Image 1 (cartoon, rainbow, N blue to C red):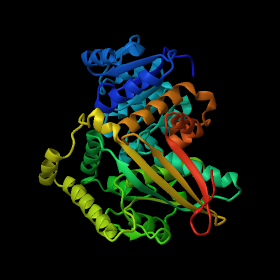
Image 2 (cartoon, one colour; image 1 turned 180 degrees about the horizontal axis):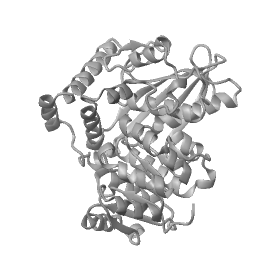
Image 3 (cartoon, rainbow, N blue to C red; image 1 turned 90 degrees about the horizontal axis):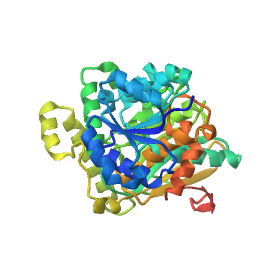
Length: 426
């Protein structure tokens, strides 16, 4: 890639999460990094830059709409990397992704839309690989904790000579914070897109629906069918090792597909027998199965309601809207604690703890996107030598783990003994 005028462009900077990401960059990006803020309203961009203070005083402002194909192409040609917070991405993001692929510009976003990632793999992956662009989806709470957490687990097992990963489960141990209105709107739009489209429904329901090598993935009832069953919103089970009750995790249907895509893009480095799911851990108390069941019912009601126009209109009045978000005080109380447990091909068992004291959908996501964008813009020689449509693990891997650890994120892998206790620290 030749030298560009700009190192990094933040597109959609004046939205709620966009402004949080801009604030993170203003505070933590090195002074020499050439950053621009982009969006459809110059007036709002000017107001945001003024709020960011002296660190952003020299940042360029670019007024460009998501439908301006020529303008987005010109913007991509000037930048080493672009980070986008403008969703729903299937509706507003395709032209920017296409521009980046054509111009060899690295790209990161916050999508949680299976159909958008599938479109990207089908329509722009080949061109991005030709131009050297890294198109990296899911660079927020969807799906960096999952994707990088499994990566460091697999690396530790390989380092210990304990083979590849087998049955692997991510459990949400605790989480405090909200899901953004933009995330909810993305889910809403994907549900609408699936209605009357059998191919879209098949893609979304297929546990390996994002694989560019689908014919080489599990297809038997034992593998694909069983995995799909575990991902149903109504599924509740009891972990035989911990005796904790598990309920469905609303982000699992997207996160699991990103993690499986990472395995495929890395030529199944996690293993051919790698099976992955995500759950919410409700503990072992008397009320644990009741809470898990209530979660399953609640999610089923919401998702079912979004599938029908009359109930969708009612839910639209209740659910957060795009651009809405919690106060700074509420965000300051946010946190998440995740735990990934696996058994390897040699029978060794590991646990990886992934956590941060940030609101997962807001402050935490802004940091993850900001650091992903800085990594794509500045760390090129240190990153895995891949191009095309990628995942955080396959595009940035250890380099991004290092960046996030420096911002207070924890990725800690330990080996477990036969009784489940920690045998060795990672």
